[in-house]
Image 1 (cartoon, rainbow, N blue to C red):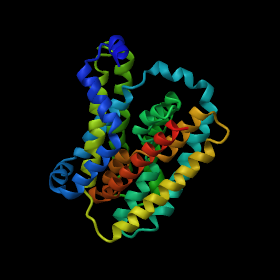
Image 2 (cartoon, rainbow, N blue to C red):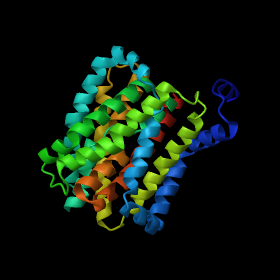
Image 3 (tube, rainbow, N blue to C red):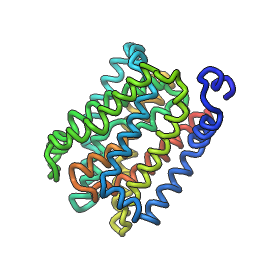
Image 4 (tube, helix red, strand yellow):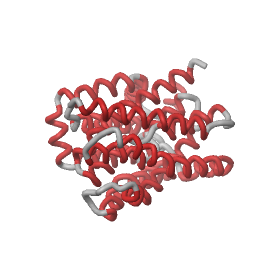
Length: 311
């Protein structure tokens, strides 16, 4: 930590807080999700004003600021592998989500489950890939490419699967462009230009993790626990398990670091972006299942890191 402070000039207090949030992310996820369910009124008031999309934009910006445009030159050697992963996930994951959505009833809940299938790579999977010893640049490349594909294809795919959207496809595209594409580009631009000489990185890490927790709290606040939520949880767990199997199959034959990156980025889809898609396309009630899914994917990622560190 001292060496890192000497190189970057980051304040020790902020660096320590960032390390604390990173180390205890899993219990914090569970606590925040529980608070959202137990005390939903504040979160629902914020959600009514569009807070989910605003918080999402902050999180995406922080994620983009972790890489420079030059970092992606090293992806040339992994280009074919990444193209295969992107093609497979773009086609197969929406189909798996559609199948899982058949386990629940009601257009809002079904829409929430289907939204997970068209979401991009979970932003936290990039950090978790690094913690697990995986190829961070590959994970970041898959994140950015999958985000662009989501911006372009989420609406058409949902329509193809028979979704009855509450908003126009153009409206969904505009929402994704404003809260995902533009913040991502802005974050990459800031890291590339580096106007603060790296002094802001601990603060950006903290803001990113806090915004992730706030998003989970906002989304969990939309949960209205009923007996039907058991079926929602089963459907999302089935989707996550199937996505994990797909990631394992796509990673066969890859070096261990790349295998970790492929499995995590394939299985972990961004619950926050999925919630934004669901809320924009099907109404705010459709975002409720993504609170459950968000807890699931973060627990899954934490377990993968735990296993990887003990090999």
